[in-house]
Image 1 (cartoon, helix red, strand yellow):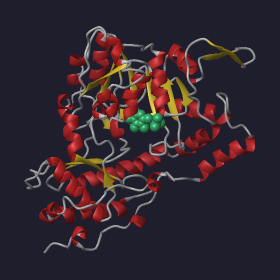
Image 2 (cartoon, rainbow, N blue to C red):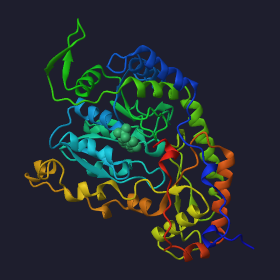
Image 3 (cartoon, rainbow, N blue to C red):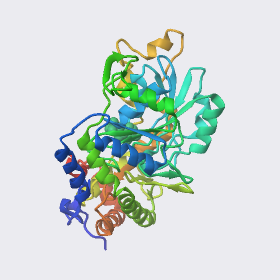
Length: 442
Ligand SMILES: *Cc1c(COP(=O)(O)O)cnc(C)c1O
């Protein structure tokens, strides 16, 4: 006999109190934050915490140079500006990612051209890159999505062949490795986010890494109004040499990120152990497809996404309807699940409407020459399929461990044993998801 599902009035397997919140705060965080308060230095490119974080992140990744920034988006934008991507240039980005991977291109008056993803890793599909290259293409931004390294060897090879810059969006991949190489160090620039959700948390902030001295210098200028410093006095000249922004970080977030960095390997270890346990157990359930970690890679599981296949589960339903029904039944069991991105990036209104900057810029730059940009979701079948069929399981972040994840597995087993009952409730008014406290938001 099957247990009565919570969605049918049975007892839920989990309570919100079973979940512990991210980030994990320790005495190291308190020590570094107190250093800021004791020093009275709260800002500045040469602030002790910012400089220490830069040195520590360069050492951790093996990059030559690092700059702290106010966000991962800022680091991406600095990278594009530093390699001279400009108006009308095209930049290849994956069809499934966070908006910022593509919007940073718009901020540089360049045009994002989307490349569909691989069906197993959900990262940019190298086999689809060359068809998207034109004489206007200047750069590629592969994304190490959810902590899974993009397939960098073929991407770097295509970039070399066509003379394109590679800027890695490693905002979700602190400590991830591709065939022994640290994510963020294989392109000309690596960009990381320090926002509250990410594997390395500063509250907000970002990190920009490069091995190229010119790309460091240009990035540094873009980071701070394009204004140079007098080399002798280190004072600002108040004479901007190029267009820049205000993308600096501050001492308090830098201090928190340092405290977190002292534990990054251990925190990633917990994510990996929780994820591997889930994959081993959930992978036994017909119709549940766990995330894939490519051979020779280190996946750091920023989020843990599973896909559902109704056919394999023996259910006659559209993938989207099946996924929604399963999410609702899991939510009723107390399992915190739900989607992150709900559509391929290019389906968002900003791309569909082409409002952008002013009247239709930057697209209008090339459209005036007869070039068209379609942004048709049907041209990205893998991202479309993923968005119909995946959900994130929010139980892998530390300090959560085996105890919580065993209950998550039990809930999956319970509802997959009674899918007829699950499908009856497909249209119930249940809103899966999580509260902000789970990831440190007030
Ligand atoms: C978080 C994230 C960003 C942006 O980082 P912010 O610090 O929020 O600006 C960019 N790309 C990806 C893939 C991200 O997940």
